[in-house]
Image (cartoon, rainbow, N blue to C red; front, side, top):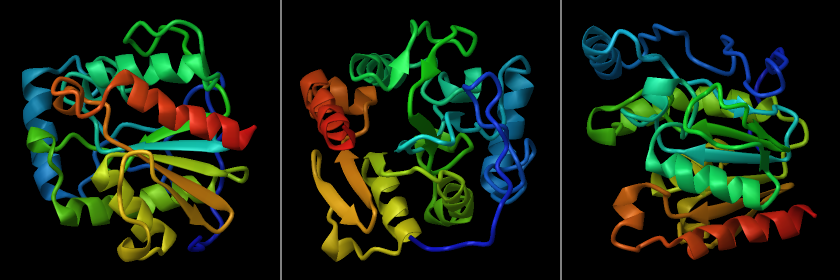
Length: 230
């Protein structure tokens, strides 16, 4: 894996959330992507009670499993401040994580529901809400150092689940892997030195409603991860 200079680890609050730092997460008013910053300001004006900031990672930085999504959803993480919390993608993801022992508690689609992750951390390739859920390539590239820093702060990392092609492609660049040697495909597993990269279609309604992704297909990815880690 690509190396970066040493960064300071910040302990997770209550064992659940990685506190944002200059190394592993953007600042609350991150100006690095002007389009996303402008969009964030417009949403703040319309919904001042929402989180409306770069969404920090959720879980244990000492975990063996890292899950990477695309970006916060408008009604999900951008509103609640916790990845995959408040929209359908979270319903499927957290139910699956509970089933395979990567989470415990009851998921109630809000950040104070008491749900905790077990040996698992969740983050996004892009930390800020993009218009129409579509980040631009330059925005993905700009946010990638935060992804790399997050990975470097996980000393026990062994498995990465990429939810969707964009997360997969960003992860390949983070790992220094060529796309031709690790093509995206649901259920595909790629060796990356000491790590394994697992691919899944994203668990949003765009894939589940037309049954491009079924719950059984999604569970099969995490069943494989659980078996490999065990």
